[in-house]
Image (cartoon, rainbow, N blue to C red; front, side, top):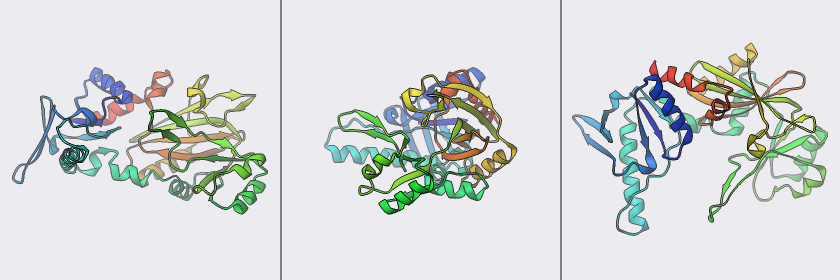
Length: 315
């Protein structure tokens, strides 16, 4: 049995659930944010843990795969103050995690500990380079002197981007995104070096961006092309990816082999990986997202990545 561990608003999980249902793949979906009231957990030392989701009653041995998608905070409705709400929600979380802890690591896609290991951009660059992938020259600094030297070394072709997440959600509910941006000479003085360490990289002269989706041994590579003033756009995510042209492509043999080694080194069964191909045809590794988005290329008609999941879950 496949257990989909996600949240009620996850459209990617809903998309894949529909495809799996059509394909006859048996699964149970656990939406963590709405699970209270339709879920129960029990445990006895002699019998081990049990999980009920609606009409489904599961033991840990019944679960062939846990697809860890996008679980969210558990919500509870009880009388009491905020501290009591937090206590009850934490008890629910610990009970569910206690059940899931009985599912062996290799049955997860991906296990949370593997996602954590694979989620640090700087370590990714080090590991990718060690596997033979070309990575951009990178500087993280709070020193204006170091930034100036880096900027001159790359003749002013330098970009800045977030180290962690570029998604900002404010208390009033408004959101904002920090995209990859060029560092112009006039903006060197404005670089937020005093606030926090900042990530700078050489700007790659891109012909095209490539998103590679890894599902076990299946790799799906899609070229993402959008020209602005005759050049590939610096950050393909801008403008909700309007006017992007999608095209399936093949990875060079050496890049394919190095990427498989890198993904395996983290113990990942799934990964969304960003590359660029230069005007000279060289493949440049940017980063891995071990729980990244992928369904949008299916919905755009460019891929059928859901089939890779269906194959993995039915195996």
